[in-house]
Length: 303
Image (cartoon, helix red, strand yellow):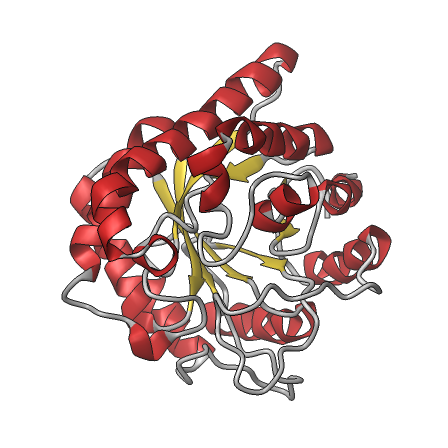
């Protein structure tokens, strides 16, 4: 813990819903871009004012899975561009006025469904990721592969950023199953954490976990540290957990909106993250159901 801690923002979709923004399935956080973009700008402002060092563009749901193939083809570039512009505007307006440095991360999310590695379509992925990269590139300082469920998803994201051929860093954030962890966790594809680290090291500057329960993430972080060994590349490690209640058997993304775990208060989550930081995690934030007050609490870990 200390001044080298990087604090991410929290869960955009659920913060938009709580704030009264347009929100429903299947569009999720993209609905606010379609119907009331000002609420997206304000959500970014809320997280910046809470102390986030990095905010993530609200393009997570600007994908065929949430918009549908036809609407993505017609409006995907427009909406991803708008999402990038809103994030940059929030940083320029708020952080710029205070002299603080806040970075914008472009979101490269699951294209065909969160937690659904078997539904990944490798032939279609390159053009879709290229569209998201092209739209967001003018506004971002780095890229974030989010909720990555398999190595081939990570490879598609790395290839898309490579095709852009710019100097922006790439952070890769994996997701792991929700089942109560034992001594080991895997990616949702069943692939090992060690194999995932081997697949991305040398190409990414940070390896994270997100959109998974904090208990499972804690186990995964220990495995990342072990896989990196002495970490000669200086890869950063971090996480941004969700606060969803345990999913029912047969749950599928985009079918229901899950409730949050009441016990994951800002203070409780901060204390969990402090344990991760004590073992070397330097990037910490929140995913679904983690709000500005959770991010504000994480800023305590900088001291």
